[in-house]
Structures are given as structure tokens and as C-alpha cells.
Image: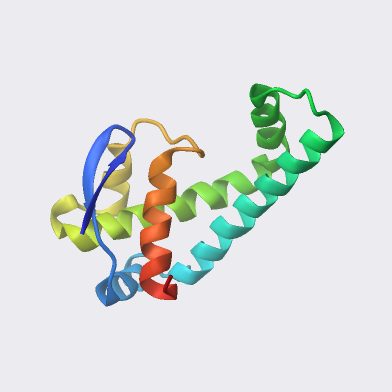
Length: 133
């Protein structure tokens, strides 16, 4: 078990076989591996786009990169955020089933930034649980 700060709130997170089973029960339309793929595809596009922007304009600022990548990736953002929050929720739920249902848990998150550190922490925990190191 690990503690992680998600949007200013501290949560215990964990991942095991229960996580996989509960993910399927709670999110019938997607499996956890489909959501891993969504996250991987989005981050890959983000990295490639950033590299392309820097190659075309070596003096580009970080703010300009964020603005341009956000503009170009906006059509993928819904799926990305949904995949991230489902994985974060199920890892929190695995550690503490008293956190409530997904929608209620989401209401407690004040702001989701797509470059927050918790995203890396949660996805690493989950991927390592199912895919090994």
C-alpha cells in the first residue's frame, strides 16, 4: 500500500487481483488494460508532439508547448482523463472500499491537471501490479 496526493487530498492506493475484478464490475465498458492503452497512447502522442514542436522551434517556451499540445490533443482528452480517474479510483478503492462510488469520489477532486505527479504514481503502481517491472 502507498499514499498519494490526488488533487490536494491524501489517499491510500493499492493494486492486486481484487483491483482487476472490481475494475470490470465497476467499469463494464472498459477493462483496465484498455485504459492503460488509452493513457499510453495519449502520453506517446504528447511526447512526440512536444519533440516535434521543439525541433521546429528550439526557442519555444514551456507555456507555448503546453498550449499547442493541449490544442492538438483536445479530442483525446476526454478518454485520457476518464481512463486516469478510473484507474486512480480503483487503486484507492482497492486500499479502502469505504471511499464510496466512483462518481462521489470524483466530486471530491477539485481540479485535474494532466501533468500532475499523482498520475505517474498511480499508473506506475497499477502497471507494475499487472505487467511487472
